[in-house]
Amino acid sequence: MRTRPAGIGNVHADWMGSLPSILSAMPLKHLAVPGSHDSFTFWVDVHAPVGPDQKSYVKYLATMFSVLAKKVMVKWSMTQNLTFREQLDAGIRYFDLRVSSKPGEPGNEIYFIHGLFGHKVRDGLLEINSFLNRHKKEVVFLDFNHYYAMDEDHHVYLIRMLQEVFGSKLCSDCAVENITLNYLWEKKYQVIVFYHHPSAQGIPVMWPGNKIPAPWANTTEPNKLIQFLETTLKERNKQGSFHVTQAILTPTANTVAKGLVWGLREYLVERNLPTIMSWVQSQRPGVDGVNIVTSDFVELTDFANIVIKLNNLLLSESERKPR
Image (tube, rainbow, N blue to C red; front, side, top):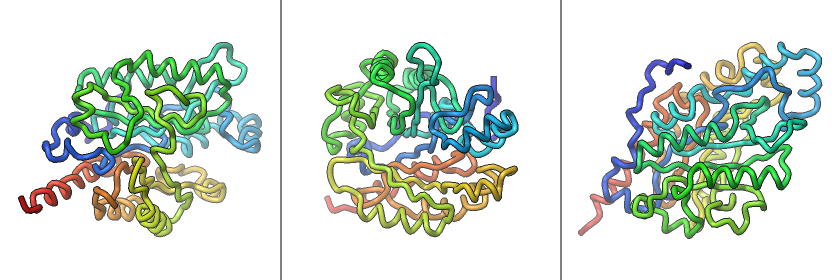
C-alpha cells in the first residue's frame, strides 16, 4: 500500500455538501470546481508495451532501449502523484480520462493510458464509487475524451461497465442550466459521464463531449498559456455546456530532449506553477468566469483549496444584491 504524500488529508472530502445553500442552488456550470489533468497517471506499467497513443518513433525507441526508454517515459507521462481516492479526499471533482485496450490481449479489457498503460479502468471506477458511497453529497465529472485501439465491442464493454459500477448514481443528459447541486442531491445523482464517441449516442446517462469543451493551449510558456485561457474564457459558451480551463503546460519533443533526466514535474511544472496559480487565484466563477479548472500534480500547491475558495466570491456577490 502506497503511503499518502505529506500534507494531503481529507479536508475537502465533503466540500460540495458543505457549500452554503445559495451556492448549492446555483447552476453547477457557474461554480468553481477543481480537476486533474490526465487524472490516472499516478501509476503506469513499465513492463507493458508502449501504448497505441504514442508516435511510431517513440514505440521504436522503447523497443530498442526497452527499460531505459520507459523509465524516461514514466517521468514525462506521469502528471499526477495522487490516487483517485487521494485526489477525491483533496477535493478534486473532475477527472480527465484517456483509455485503451491492449492490442493483442484477448477479451475487451480497458486500461487508462498516457504513453504507458495504467490501471484497469474498472479498478479506478470502483475506487471512485467507493468514495461516493461514503460521501453522498459529492458529485464527480468523468470525462472520457480519448480512446485508443478500441472497436465497437470495447465501447459497449466500457459503457456497460460504467452503468454497472455507478448504477443509479449516473445523471441523465439534460439541459446544463438545470444541473444544480440541489437537483443532483434530490435525484441522488453523483456521477456525470462525458463520452466523446458516437457509440454512446442514444444512451441517456452518457453526456456528449460537446457539453464539456476543454480548450487546450498546447504551449510550454506560462504567459502564452494565460493569454490563451483568458481568450477562451471570454469566448465561453453562454448556454448549454460546462467549461474546462486547462491550466497546464504541454512539453514538446524539444522540451523532453532538453529535460530528459528531470521529467515533466521538475523541468516544466514546478518552476512555472507559481505564475499559473497566481492567475488561477485571481479568477472568479460565475456567468463569464471559470468553471472547472485542471492542473498537473494537484498536490504541489494548495490547488484544490484555491479553486474551491473562488466560490466565496459568488457568495459575497449574492449577499450584496438588494433584497
